[in-house]
Length: 123
Ligand code: AMP
Image (tube, rainbow, N blue to C red; front, side, top):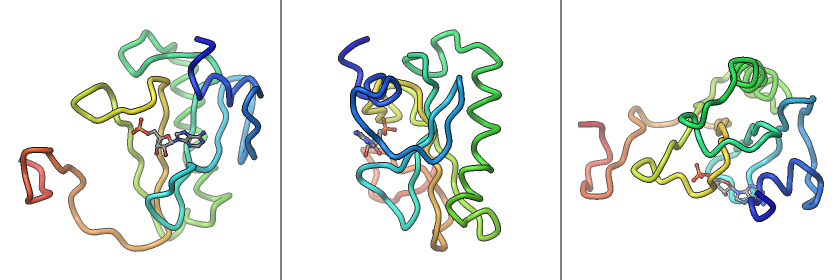
């Protein structure tokens, strides 16, 4: 997986400013933030997505990091959205499992926008 950009971040080939890290996970800010706060949490080990046999301890480490990242970013009280784009229909663009933590300003209700709909609401 030497060409995986998140593997390169995880192994230090691409330098990043870690918000939080341990043996299993790494958190850092998204390069193209979609809100005042937009951070990512990735497993150090490569998994394509949630369907790639991710061990429970890795899932636990990822989700345990979510509120810690939110606190570091100062959005633990105001709230935040946690998103995993999983696979093609979800428009996953980086094929290394990652969790988005987005916040810093009030959001509209609803979170699903289908590509064949202008409504921007879940069906
Ligand atoms: P997704 O569309 O769910 O696969 O999200 C991939 C995310 O990775 C996008 O929000 C990108 O902006 C972000 N991203 C891609 N390359 C980098 C990078 N080198 N550093 C930080 N974030 C990145």
